[in-house]
Each structure stands twice: as structure tokens, then as C-alpha cells.
Length: 145
Image 1: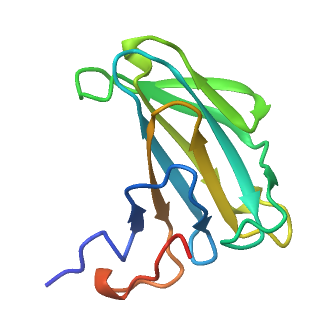
Image 2 (image 1 turned 60 degrees about the horizontal axis):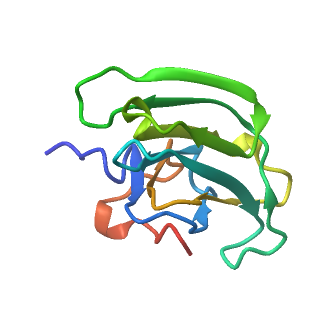
Image 3 (image 1 turned 45 degrees about the horizontal axis):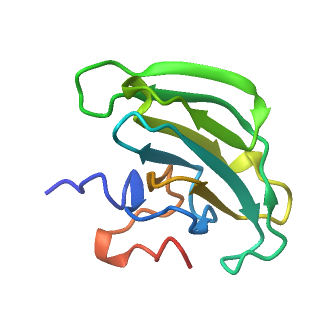
């Protein structure tokens, strides 16, 4: 039987809002965010040296992200901005969902953790990808440790 994608291609943290995510065994992370009712939100990206948040500081690497309604009725819209540590989604249904990817190479030397925090009530999910070590899902390391 072929190995499924979880553990081979990605690991997932469903409740990732404001949680430190380790990139030590991954090439990068995709943060999938959602806030209904066309409310708009601000998402802030930080980096740290460890899961306790040591040396936490802004990671100003976001130049591109994608938005959609999040319900599958529309295609993703690519949005660009000057490098920043924040993404601001508009109060429009077409921006209820947002995806931003962070490459591990964007972190400063000595930093191995990132977190994306919603300033509103947005849900944030983290999907680490390009796993250095492929494992069965039950043998994957905890992501927020």
C-alpha cells in the first residue's frame, strides 16, 4: 500500500493561530486562514529561535499571498505587496480565505520557528511541507514543540 501524503509530503497543525511551528524538518509552511462574514483580518508573521519564543521578532518576508471566498466557488486570487510581516485581508467575501507560504530559507540564522497570529477571530492552520524525514502519521513529531 502506498504511503498517504500526511507524513510524506506534509504535516498539519489544525489550530495554529499564534502557535510556534517548527521548520527544522521542513522546507517551508503554508498557513491557511479563514474568517467568515467578509470581516477582514490582519495576520502577523514572527520568527523565533525555539518553541518558547526566544528572540521572537517580525519576519518581514511576505511579498505574496492568495485569497478566495474559501467555499470553493471561486479561484484563488494572487496578491502582492512590499515585503512585510503582515497580511491584511479586506472586508470582502472574496477575501474570507487567505493562504501565505513561508520558506524555511527566509528565517534569520539561528531561527527555526514561525507563527502566524490573527488579530481578529480568524482560524489559522499550518501545513509544513517538503519534509526532510518521511514518517507514518503516528510517528510524526509534534509541530508546536
